[in-house]
Amino acid sequence: MIDVEEYKKLMYDVIGAIHEVHCELGAGLNESCYQEGLEIQLKEQGIQYMREHSFHPYYHNKAMDSLFRIDFLCKGEIIVECKSVSELISGHRAQLFNYLRLLKKPCGILVNFAPRNYELERYFYDKENNNIVSIDGKIILDFKARRTRLYL
Picture 1 (tube, rainbow, N blue to C red):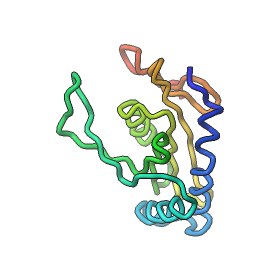
Picture 2 (cartoon, rainbow, N blue to C red):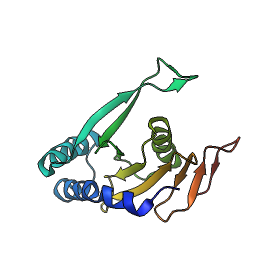
Picture 3 (spheres, rainbow, N blue to C red):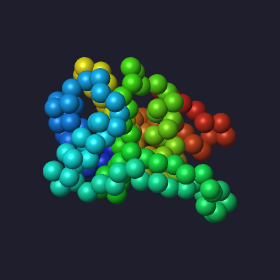
Picture 4 (tube, rainbow, N blue to C red):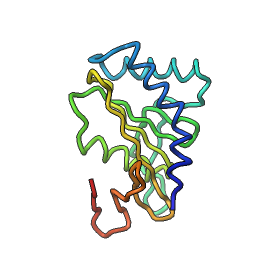
């Protein structure tokens, strides 16, 4: 079972960086502005990151030609997906959940910078049990099931 409390601590300063970006830039800009601001903030805070990290999914242990790109990979463990939309939808969450599963990373942050009060959601990937866990430790997506079940 994944230690949610330990990973919440790991995410703390990344969330602080997100907060700083939104405080300074405000609401309503395009996604790329927030990504650029977040890159500057992560650098200033000395948080290790990779921006627009690309990867190929695997099928039967073979790399596929398809290419995915995550907005940020922080501390080698935290996937950050930035949005600037009227509201977060299930497709945004599904994108993050699949990135967590495909890269086998334990932490994911989905942030929507567009609203006056930014929206931030934290999720965790339990690779031992192949499921997505919410901030309160509840299973919200079980990849093991023959059909994926979403428990939101």
